[in-house]
Image 1 (cartoon, rainbow, N blue to C red):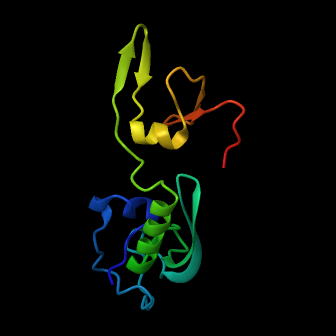
Image 2: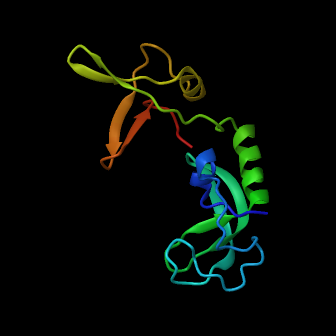
Length: 144
């Protein structure tokens, strides 16, 4: 079994590359972290989530220095199955910023709009989280 890097990265097929510096998960016999190289990996139970949804607790190899998490293939497949079951698998999409009058508009793909319950003309609240994230919330609706 080849280890994968973090769950966030393992959801992107291009990041599912094996790391030759690691032995198979469960056999990380004092192998130093391939990211920072500072500490041996430690086997721990870790919580996994995607887009704020709980995917469960799984065993992983964790670097105590940099915090990088390495999931085994079996765990990643279980995470993927849970993400598909709750309907969040494949929701992430790239989109374009358009111009509407003097404003900018972000196109929301239909599948994502359906998942969020967004419809044309609906009033939403929009605010930033830092300089690289935008939150769209429906006023009065409870969030998970």
